[in-house]
Each structure stands twice: as C-alpha cells, then as structure tokens.
Amino acid sequence: MGNDISFIHVVDNAMKSAAFQRFGTFFDLTNQNKDLVFQPYRVTQRKIAEKRGESSVEFLSLWRTRITPDWSRQRTSVARDGISMKYSDSQKTSIVTVKAVPVTLDYELRFWSKDLDSTTEAVESYIKWFQDFPNLIVMYNGLYEMDMYMKFGAIVDESEYNIYDKGLYYVTQLPVSLEGWVMTTVDTPTILTIILDLYLREGTSPDYRDTFLTEYVITADS
Image (cartoon, rainbow, N blue to C red):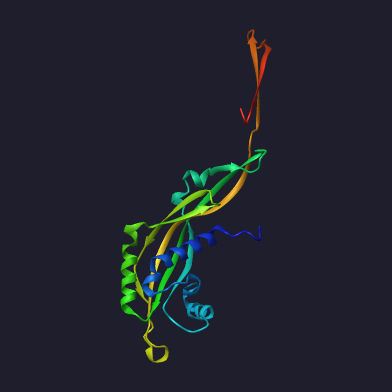
C-alpha cells in the first residue's frame, strides 16, 4: 500500500497537464517540469527558482486548496454500488469492483509574467474554456474513463506593485473547481458454481412429501 499512488495525486497531475497545455504557449513555456510548479502561493517563487536554478518569472503555478465531499452526487451508481471491472485472477475467484466517493476539488491557477499582453490573452482563453470542453478525463487503472466537470470563477489580480524591490511583474489568480471522485477498488467474491436441486412436493400441509427429481450444476462458464 505504501508504494501506491493516491488517485488524488493522479488528478493533480492531470490538472497540471491540462493547465500547461492550455496556457503554456501564451508565455512561451515548453517544459512542464521546469515551467509549472505545484505549490502554495507563498512559496511558489522559491520553488520555481529551485527548479530553474535562478529567480525568474514567466511560469504557471497550481495548487489544490480544498477537497469537499459532494453529497449531491452520493446517490449515483458508481458511488453507491461501484462498477464491476474484471476478474481478479484466472480462476475467477473474485471480481474487481471500482467504487468512488464524489468530491469537489478546488484549485488555484496563477499566471506569473512580465508581459501584460500575454497575461490578458491567457485570461481570455480561461474565460472561453467553459465553452470548449471543460472536462478533465482521467483513466482509472487504464480501464475506466472518469469525466470530471470543471467550473470556473472570478479572476483576481494578485500582482505586487512594489516594483523598486522586486521589479514589475503580474500575478493573476484563476480558480478551477473540479467535480471529481476519490476512487478505490475492492475485490468482491464471485459465485463460480450454483447447484440447483428440483423436488416434487406432494400431499397437504403439514404432511408434505418431497421427492427428489434432478440436480442442475451451473458454473461460471456455462
């Protein structure tokens, strides 16, 4: 268990890729590992400097700020019963079932740039995002496609204008709320053989007489 990657971590990585693919070109960014940092706002510049080996702007930052159970989606089939995926072994002794807890994951995306025009163009792309295809698609175990709907909100200028100490650069914060899932798998034992015995009941209550007629054996391969 200790070596397993949590599904939330998978969603975080998918959000990083989606943000970089959508907005990286506005700032001439080409390397997601060096040009995007997944860290809280207050330590972002320190972490991007550690990645690049220098203090610089023109980058993206992303951080997950909150996870909230979403009880409005708790009644969906994937949340209540799960989805049967495949047999766990060749003997078909159990079947892998995927269950999910519905959650809302809130992220803060930020643009860090010295170029106001690039920032404005990226903001316009963010505004248009909900009309394009605002779904984050994640494959669970490479077998089941999870479509997570993205919601957007108010854009906030967080620029520091103490330009004499740090120079002028623009910081723009853009929220992304994700209707996501926390996934888990359970092994459900399977019924491999059903034995059906047929009897003929004769007589009247309470003096019934049951006579065995035949037996059917039904297997999983039948």
